[in-house]
Amino acid sequence: MEIIRKYFPSLPQSAYSPLAALHGLYSEWNARINVISRKDMENFEERHVLHSLAIAKIIQFEAGTRILDVGTGGGFPGIPLAIIFPDCEFVLVDSIGKKIKVVNEIKNALGLNNVTAIQSRAEELNHPFDFVVSRAVTSLPEFVSWIANKIDKNHRNALENGVLYLKGGDIRPELQTLKAWRCNIYDLDRLYDEEFFTTKKLVHLYK
Image 1 (cartoon, helix red, strand yellow):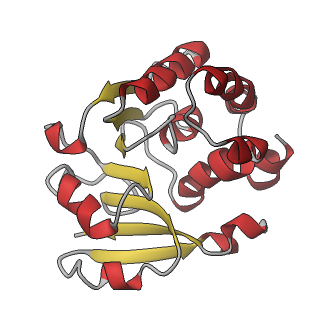
Image 2 (cartoon, one colour):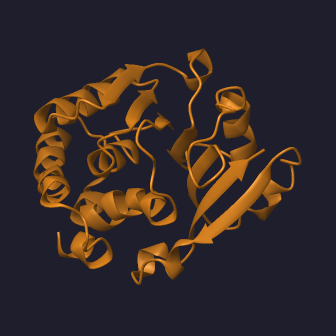
């Protein structure tokens, strides 16, 4: 947990305790249902928890904010964000049932009443959200086609409602095809010192 305290020194203990519990819970469930690679489990706090919390370096969600995590896998970035934003509502979706099973088990173990986990495709959801978050589940143009009609037009946060997408590498070719969207790009190596974040970015898309 030292790495989390390094970058988030002001979190209350009510957030640190469940964040600290994540490694053990995921180790236990990963032994039964593989949702995280062995290499990544060795760097769990950095590559999953800290990576997910990069979103919290850019925005402090207001109470009542509704966030959709698409292609959540084992629960990232949704679970760490739900821990530090207990007054927000998180809906985590994935099309693979065993991954949603793990998310539900982690959610129940931590008592995260602000998390709903659903086995579904994003296109099948009908409710509007303030933000849609994800970690590089596909190309940005394809992702936007899934969620374009799911962004609420009523804003309550400092950032405009839209997409918060964690992705690595050169994303400029993908962004050139999204003419209808405005974009902010945040380089994660300006937020974190670790080498893992050298090419990582957070993309904020909005209209």
